[in-house]
Image 1 (cartoon, rainbow, N blue to C red):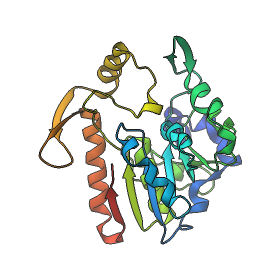
Image 2: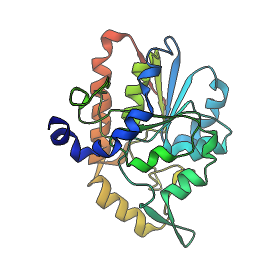
Image 3: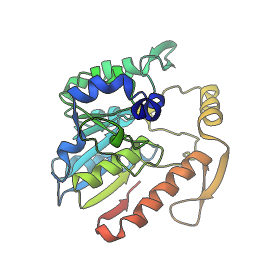
Length: 264
């Protein structure tokens, strides 16, 4: 009864079979103590320092959101963890690519050499078909609603839920035991030319699609201070909430002595 009432709105019931078959990310907790981590997001500034990742590949743990994988591929970088905990069905979500309607599954999974991905991290509330992605290893984590106490077996509920896949990467890096965490491509703002994603991550380049994305998905545009504290940039209500969550988590981690760097 408790399982149904707590989990039915988050697809957990549909994933019980997958959750029993696939390992949790829990198996990697504290396996990277003393290692640094870099979280890669597909913001427009990613092109400015993605080349630096090649220099530290193999020395740090690289986690990227699925949407940023194409950028890493184009630079010959293999992330340790690719994370996609978004409940969206990639097979149903489509966009216009060069005049052809394609699904995100086709673009992000089938056309992305996915068999080379070492670890794909999904969620207990992901669309069940994401477990079918042909990565070498598929793992799951419990983000969002804390449901562990309502399920049989041991379930680790991640608590740093900030609303984006990037926050899930951050939470995972903390539990992996990483001593320092750097963010790149986490712009949380539009570029000066109005771009919201890096070149490889753009899904529909039309102005119409861009306006639709901004209005429907992210709320009203807001002018906020830039990284230098002097100039301003255009962001939106959703991105500001994401940034606030990161600031909150950073304050909570003061006692843990984890070094945090925003290298975006």
